[in-house]
Length: 622
Image (tube, rainbow, N blue to C red; front, side, top):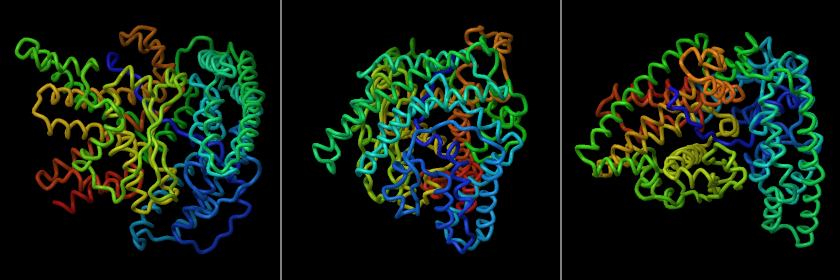
């Protein structure tokens, strides 16, 4: 698999702490005021979602225009950036008790008596409850809170998340402006607690490796060295300039306050954290195996939980899952190799077609000649009618670009930011990495399909039109949503191929399909090797790889355990569902109808549920 490894794009998130750091504190708060009563299904799920999201102002800013009115959210305290604090067994017990209260309330409903919208909400809540009952009920629950790399990582951890969160924070009222100012002022103290996290890991026997600390420091230093040229200053100023509800004097005052906050608090916190991390070097100087692999049974338990969280599936036999994926990888790789041979044969038999295929592969020729994202979306809206049902609405789609500095260090090609669940006909936003778009222009069309039509954006709007709940919109199954959007790329290539007589275009579309699935399945396999099966650098050397390659694999995947599972495993699973339906129904299979069925239960049902939906569709159309 060595020649196939790439840094595949991951979708940026602004709600990293929604179901993590925020939940224990929120759990204790809700535990004291939870009063059993008669709830409707939607009321219960909204209450549960509120308790999960807690007082995360950034999350609420994304999910809802009016969270107090729409979902009963109650603000408390002054908002601040994510801080590390010690998690105790009492915290875990309180969280588990709160979950059990919600479980008892959910169990009062009979799924068979619910209408479709409530049944979808029931399943979404059942999935989230199952996931977090497993986490907080684990004998390693306290350890799990130390194993995450959210605070300190080679990609900048929560420090890097701060800048991207500010970019996506909407100023809709003066309260929003004050909230962001308060959060910015809190960053120095928040970043300081990350040293407590480093110490807590060390004390618990989970020390950070030098490679992680050094990369984190490199990121922090690169930010600090930019001084007042750091892009966050201009991002905030631009947001204030567009805030029509502020007077000119208010704008000027806030600009000064934010400039001081970024300089005196954010930048100061960045510098102090970088310097303070020096103290935690020397525990593990040379990486041989991943963090989770070094934690033994606790690490395996955490990986199992991550897999369940991403897919909704509880796996007892990972070897079988791994072997099934290896079989799929081998099948697709064989197809890719055969196709490469077919293309190579054209060098003599049809040199003109061969040359055009090479132009596609080198990025010198673009599919359909499309290079502008706005033009791509217009084409994709027409192509999508062969893949998915038409939307009732026509959403306005806005494109923006990452800051150049961020774009060059990010492996994210683009990301879609959900519109508020309680806003009808909301404008939708896709952020593009201009650096990747420029250096790899051939990736942009399938990326816009993945993020936009008929991928994430389409699926989310379709679910909103069908009455999706807050819970399902904020905590859907990642392996379904990412698997769906990877499948969309595959389906798009089928559409393009069917609409052209150009042999080079057809060959490139087929090549893209095979290359894409081989790449993503390989990433998921590497992830399982490094983080669950515990492959070491020496293991890869023994397999014939270079030490440099083995170390790159371990150091790449050890900080992002199970991140590629939604992409690789989800892609493989979604293709398998479609193959199953097509093989069972033959001429009775309808691509649009089947995909409408898959997407009919919200933004992300579990993979297990998707399999049952497939079985139901086959039975209905047999």
